[in-house]
Length: 469
Image (cartoon, rainbow, N blue to C red; front, side, top):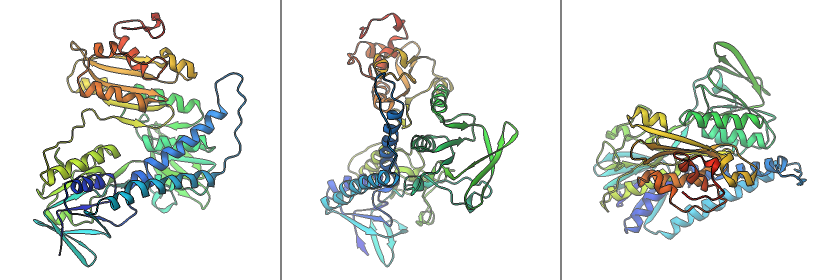
């Protein structure tokens, strides 16, 4: 039985954040990972998708430049080279941000293999013929794509996001099942690289967890550029004849069918919480299969903590990293930390992007918080006019009376960048006056946040350029 101060199951963002926090306190860590080190984000998630999206967007803008006098052309794309360059970036970041990090901390021992928890007090984990013991365990085993139980689907060579980001070819016609962030991002990526894309969504609008105005604005943008979007679809069967997929279902009570060369299933990810022996030591799961934790990342078993996507909550890599550090801090009694998601930013990397933080007006009303809202179309933002791209808006949600900002939503080409102003506003209780009396640089997209704040008490169409409060 080999001894350590902490055992970590997993090798992604949450696992590494926990292991590094422990190593910085000079604690011995055993990190157990059977797959490719680095987890979802660097290998098959954020990094490969965002670099491919950047390539696709560059091609699209060259083909649709809105400036008079520019004569741009798009050469035939080299599909293999685009994806090879993507993989080069993935390999580089995995090496620099994970493998070299392990080399920098001799306190961390990476054990390759599947870990199985045999006891909880003290923690004992078996990996093949080896056994490890430590006072505390952190589970950070991530999540896996969830495949809906549609008849016939399991018998077809459908894609998940993993296969879509490593494709050997471009399908002429791509069917995307699911219209949340991943489905829309990858659907638009393929559309902008030349595929005919159809998106199918079970509920009545895309991005169903976002503000309805956000969903409507993004739907308009995506359909304007040629994507087909069908919401409120009940899918019943998927067929594959060796060359073509046929997806059958009903929409508004009427039978429909869609055909394509490939099907991408993007219906979310579910926690990878079983198969590690956790159920045998009393670790409780949530109804959706995640490990139940409190805000200290502690499970129902006092010696076991969990962090990241395996908990099933807020599946973002930056949340996973924060939670991993919190779990290690509390597990090793290095301090007392709690995960606070009240000012959690969310970004969907379509074009235009979607970003949000805090309450929507609907959520505030449901929580019994009286609020007022104002949405500023980007046509009133000077930078958007200069860019000749006024798709979208910036919306602020404020509490009545105090005029404290409690939420922000944005649909804009740089929404993911400007949302951080909303994060600060929500987290630190800023008011409309705080925003309107703060200097914002002229001809930036972020200036739109100040203009959105001004709309509550002024007609911004009657302001001069870079007007003050």
